[in-house]
Length: 196
Image 1 (cartoon, helix red, strand yellow):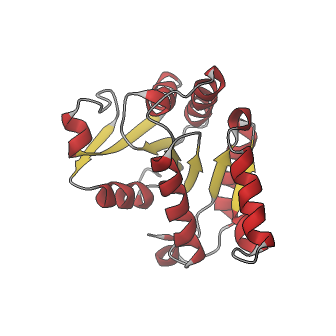
Image 2 (cartoon, rainbow, N blue to C red; image 1 turned 180 degrees about the vertical axis):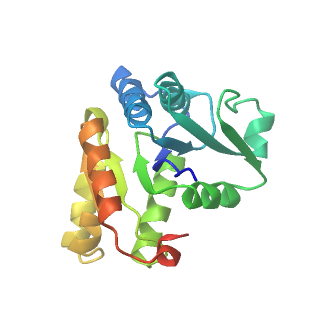
Image 3 (cartoon, rainbow, N blue to C red; image 1 turned 90 degrees about the vertical axis):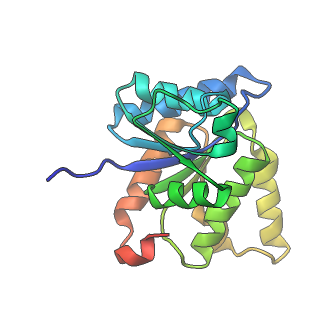
């Protein structure tokens, strides 16, 4: 009987962004996933930071699983070199499958799609649908304003301090991945609670 590798769901941009630091951070995360023998679960794209993190995982000997909606596959942005590439009909199916296949979540720099995915799994955790760790890699200060805004929502009474602390934020990929893995190992919720 083989055990499944730790699966990290990574949300990130389908563009590279304005700074080379963003792609460098995505590649660093991918190398760490591969080095640790983990599995990447992500949106299945071959472009932007999505492609960079997947390529780095594969180059480091890790396993990569993509989930992509048919509309994006038809535009030929799907990554052909993955261990698994699941083509689904809707974004809802994509996000559900990614969440089900993952033990933890990590957001890298990205746009509205990345924000939406991050907020959804964060909301699901607040509502008790899962107890999986959630991380935010603040590469090159990209999320500085976001982190400040979340602190503002706490001060204004719309978010609890406990929910703010659920989101593990960091600037160093190796250190942040270590924190996510440690929190996942400590989780003592029953399996049916941790499944989405």
